[in-house]
Length: 235
Image 1 (cartoon, rainbow, N blue to C red):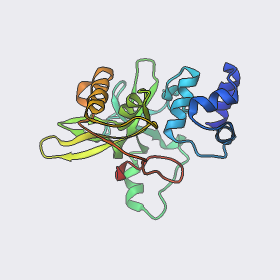
Image 2 (spheres, rainbow, N blue to C red):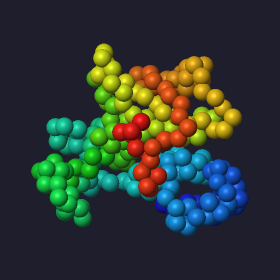
Image 3 (cartoon, rainbow, N blue to C red):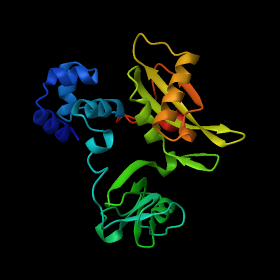
C-alpha cells in the first residue's frame, strides 16, 4: 500500500507537502507512512484516495481485482453464483492459507468443500470484478437486511467535518440490530442534534435509506488495534 501511494503521488505530481496537508499530517509524519514505517488507518487511506481522485476501493490493492477463477458463494448456503452479494471463497489449489493455529473449529469453518471461506463480503459485477464491502463478522442484521459497515463509513467520511468514523451494530428490540455510527469530528466542530440529522440525511441520500445510522454518537477518539484498525466490537 505504501509503495502504491508513493507511485500514485509521483504520477500525479503531488508534493509531499501537499499530501501532508491533504492527510492532516506533518510532512515528516506523512513521509513515515509513505515509507511504510507507520501503520495506515482508514482515515489516512481515505484522504489519500481523495487526493488522487479515486475511491478507497480503487486505491487499496486487492479489493477490485478481476478474479474470474475464484468463486463467490452466497453467505450461509455455499452455492456458487455468477452475480450476487456473498462471501468470497478461494479454491484450495490457489490458496496458501493452511490452518488457524490452535483453533481446529475455526479451521473447519474456514475450510469447507475444498474452498477457503475468507469471511470477506463482496459482490461481483457483470465484468467479473469483485467489490469488497465488509466482513461477515462485522455485518449488521437489521429488520432482515444485511448491512456492511464499510460502505456506511465511506459515505460518512465524505463529510468535510468528519475526522474518523466507525460503524457498528447496536441492539434493538424491534429490528434486532440498528446501525450505529461513532464519529470523531475535526477540531472546532461540535456535535448536536442538528448535525446528527444532517449526517443521517446525507447517508440516506447517498446509499439505501434503510442503511442510515439510527444512532449517532460523537467521541473524542475511536478504539483501535496496534495497526490502526478500528475495533468495532468496542464501539
